[in-house]
Length: 418
Image (cartoon, rainbow, N blue to C red; front, side):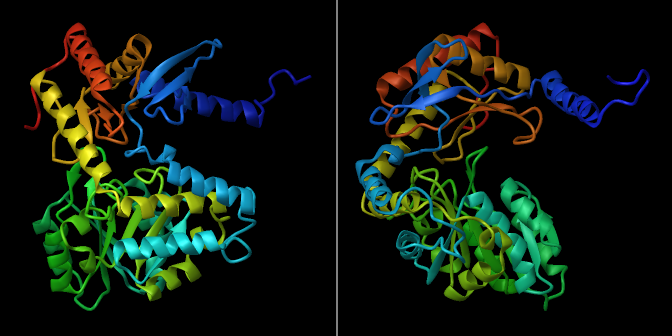
């Protein structure tokens, strides 16, 4: 029995702090809830929502990152089944111990070929690839200064923050600011510019050519995150840099296997020397169990298939254009920078969550609210990711639902970006 007047136990003290932190999210309308989704192979983007009361309901997923539906492609599934039957479930260890298999090597060869680089290095996720690489580079290049776009992904920010080296943050896509920052630093210091090809929240493109020009002028390395572009842009799906004929000017390319390729994992593609150095020094690579061989095999099959299938990319871009055109026709405040990402700005976290809940409960449409800190306060949004598998019926249903809810909630209908 606790003594009267005794100090609260450690768990009780921690519980109060945790309750306060969670309570703040609830008060601001930013508390995120998950639903139980059972994806239905062969019927993407349709899925089943398993409710907490035991009931279930059909839904259409409109916020998935399996952009091309490769998570159900027969070539991918066949490769995974074959590898699973041949090798079992896990890899057996880190890459340095026993976790490098023929499937990992084949995947890295596919990725190096995709990007026209000497080598590639596979990680458990693109987040880990960014974090591990950017946090390790200052150890390899003493005195390195990293110039980072202010809207870079959290994984890039974290890797740069942890590396202990010098960093400069330039205003988003502002080449004058980037140039001024580099020009003010020691010309002899090694430099690297880190940026993205497509920024996932607004769907805008990074000025790759202009950044490469500045890098050439000042002798800087270039590091691009193509996570939201690999598989979907370029003749073989290598990303925006391939589309624009600029891959040879990029020193390190980061990509994911979990979005357009429909599986899991991340990677960098670069020179053989760079990949070898990161492999040998990055704790995020050295001390992590490698991807299961079946995952690696499925990813390799997906990369190989999309090198040869531009039709899926064409269909994907068409779906995005159609959805944006129809939402603009309703006067909804969408951002349109020409990419496949369709953000609809709501501007308030509570309203955004309410719209998300109403779309799910009333219409069987699943799209998660996007709030601070992922986006700035006042720009809360619903972010739609149309795919080649979202047909006319699915799009009609979404457009009608948004039109009705926008009127019911008396929300702004002024388009933000034509």
